[in-house]
Image (cartoon, rainbow, N blue to C red):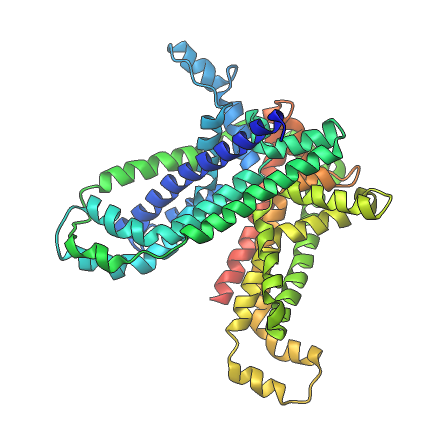
Length: 472
């Protein structure tokens, strides 16, 4: 392994672990505040705290870099009062900003777990009477370890897969190195070797997750605890307010400050990038739902292949740049033409591999909820497989399939590395347009497609919310 490769490896690991630590701290503390101190109150506030997830990491990155750079209004203001702001173009700044963007992964999972764990363990410990700090540290956090690990691993995978944000922060990571080798130096084998290294890191993290993902024996921890959950509420409340300002209020305000209605309409119409993004998200989501449904049904039909089929769930942990490189190299080894010459088919293939995991998992869980008696009754009837599917199975999985469609559509809208590597010539999307502007430091111009990207995401989020209400 050459010396040049150690820099990107160290950059990827430092950025990934740094972002994960920040996201775990912010997400866990916010979840404890809302679920332990407020309970069922503040429903709207909890919804707002999940909003940063609608922002792609690269949009969050250019908002902060552009707002705090030397020549910005904020930078000039602080210099006027004798304060020199530190640069965000380093591992620490990138980790903090990315953690503020991705903490909802931890916040949502830990919050859901707390709704089960908190009533079960807290009231027993409360009757014994120690400080609330001890009950949080010695009861709640150990009980929440599985969900904290799950949310943290999602943040880690997203950070390792990121390309646009690390490019904006000026970091050297494996994703930027792959892109540079592939397009900058036309070194296909060099890019492939870097992709293999990145794959090895991801697989290693998956195995580490399984090793550390163990439940904690709470019964041993509860014996000497008692608490009164009031003393530290001011601390948690102050922390939550600070996060709300940095992760929600500031990014939205900065985008609106940069917004130019004329430029926004121009971005909306030029090359139809808004429609291109919606088209790619819709077609890609439809294909992924169909493939996920087929895989989910194949699992219940043939148990011998379940372990092999379950490998499809690793796709979400693989960066888009890695998947794109593998597809391009594999296609070039078999055929004498580039896969990009086939239009968006290669891109949809990469997106299918990348986001197949939620489709397969959600639809499999939905199928598992069908009563066994219904399936047995259907088996003795003389009906064709197609009639059986629409008569029984489709009624149970249709709402889940719609939910998966909108979830995957939101992820496809935000995907950047695979789009940059595999999109056909002349096919621009909102994510590729944002990269074009941010790579040149044109933050105000990048704000226009970013607003459109958030708007497109909101469209799918609203639809997803309606489906969830009907499902419940």
